[in-house]
Image (cartoon, rainbow, N blue to C red; front, top):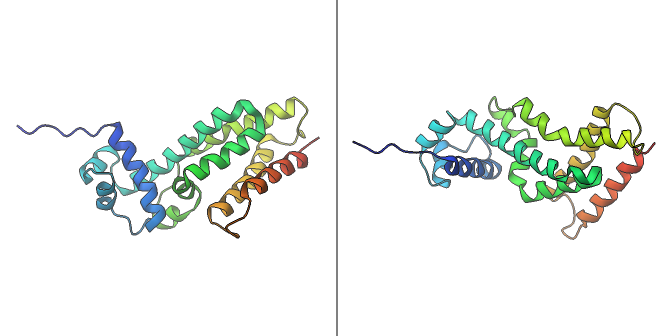
Length: 191
């Protein structure tokens, strides 16, 4: 009798990591399940067993990115808005393939694949909570917290996307630019 194949959490995590890397490098249309399985040193059976198919694997990879990002935001939340902003950039620079997979839009053009709405929303909750806390403390204008959070997110997201795309001279001081932008955002929303 053949021994059953066990596809554990370690295999699942490897598959999620290599999926983001392969899709980032090759694009979603060119990446096959065989490519992903080979890169993760497992079989396509593991992918079907753990995820179901390519669309489900891609969705799981995007959700994994949002969960990881959200965890980093929750860890930084005690430091307030500036620390959340810094943590945003750090996470993106440490996980560039996941970041591009989450926000690049390439998947939606290829296959019906988008993050699970609750997972994506949950990852941004620390920002909304920090905005609300700063408003309650009188450090931010009392505009709609969701609007303020989205405006702040747009600022940091844009700069991080430019940095990851290497949209300037190689000696560009992205860290300095990012800090200046964070200070500018804080001043813009001050009461």
